[in-house]
Image (cartoon, rainbow, N blue to C red; front, side, top):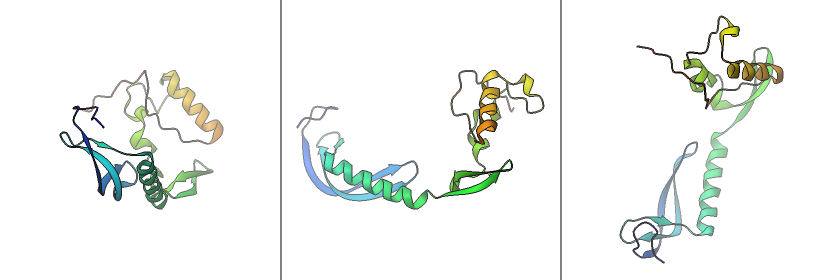
Amino acid sequence: MKCSECGSDYIKKVGTIVEKDSIAGKYKVHVEYYECENCHDKLYSLETCKILDKERLKRRKKIMKYEKYMHHGNKVWVRSDLIGKHRDYCLCMVCKKLDVTDRKKNCKIANAVFKNSVKFNLVTPMWECPEFLCKNYM
């Protein structure tokens, strides 16, 4: 089997590989895999991918706990490690178009998302937005 990166041959190996997941972090799994003898690109079989996925999900399950808590007078479900962090990730909080003292001055997107959040008792941090203008903090 030829490497798609450099054209060299893959060599079948069995060993411990380290994977990294945004939630589960780094974890090690002892599996069979193929490694390019030149550029060290790794190739995993379907069976190896299933083993890696199973380990990742097992580790995520240990980390990700869910609970209900009061938010603006309503009981809502949340992942425990994210309680109260919506402002840390929301683009609106650092956007020039947000005016917390007068909603009429906010952009239409922020107002529509907020209206929907209130209607359904949601917390909706804005991750991406076509109208975003970063505030100048300097």
